[in-house]
Amino acid sequence: MGRVPVEMSRERFEELVGEALDEVPEELLGLMSNVVILVEDDPPPGEDLLGLYEGHALTRRGWDYSGVLPDRILIYRRPILRICDTEEDVVDEVAVTVVHEIAHHFGIDDERLHALGWG
Image (cartoon, rainbow, N blue to C red; front, side, top):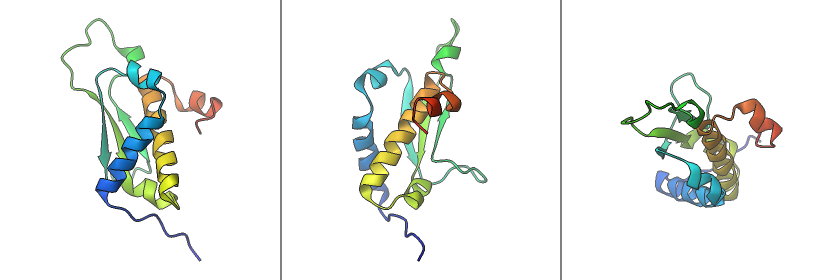
């Protein structure tokens, strides 16, 4: 029998994103600069993503970085719900996804994240 993805409202999912953010170390969140975290239902067509970082990594911001729109961390609701069995799984998966995208904000690539155990 195939797995049944977790069903939940967008409002509940956003609450769980808030809970997941509480799991992210305060030191890390405190270092973020000019970033918003948003929930979207689906990634762009053809993309198989749980989350996405859009913006200018801190390591690439030069003296001329000013007056720009905030970077965005997008968390994709439906793909995360598809791979989770319980609400606890959703919180864990969102926490890992948020840390992953925050790492990109700090200029840390996927290879280094995997080495650090954030597969």
